[in-house]
Figure 1 (cartoon, one colour):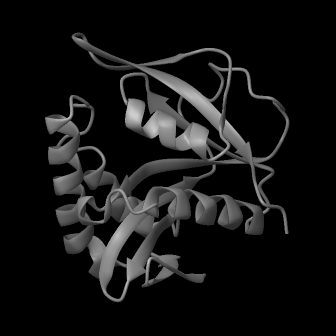
Figure 2: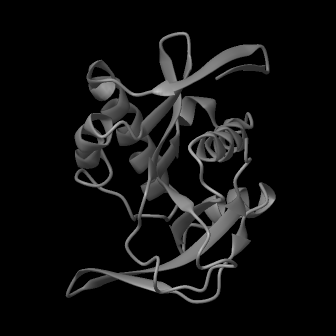
Length: 180
């Protein structure tokens, strides 16, 4: 899938093992930026240690400008917590977007919206009726991005227990996929 925005020619494709070093570098900067902005929810393990399996399972997508990764996300067939919220159509076929990130060098250019809309289109191409996601309650920039792009909040909260001292309160959001 190709498109141009702000004079940038971008292409969405499945990630490859050769992308791992750049992916990890991009996400290291995303994590630093999130920490600086009071959203310390990712670390050196998550999400980076999941990329290898995502690539092996053909579910990690990268949005690139030439050789630069500008955004990435996984489209997964299930998600922890999916049974903890009330979706608009509990029986509807859904994919879940996970590990969504935008390269900090491309922030404030609409890349997040572009990547989300490409994910919605790709989910529809893969036969999903809905694209769903979970977002930690303190991640207001992400919540605002999802709402701006037509995602609706589901009723309920998923409490993801990380360890005895850390529980992440996550909201579910969904949007109808672009059916083809």
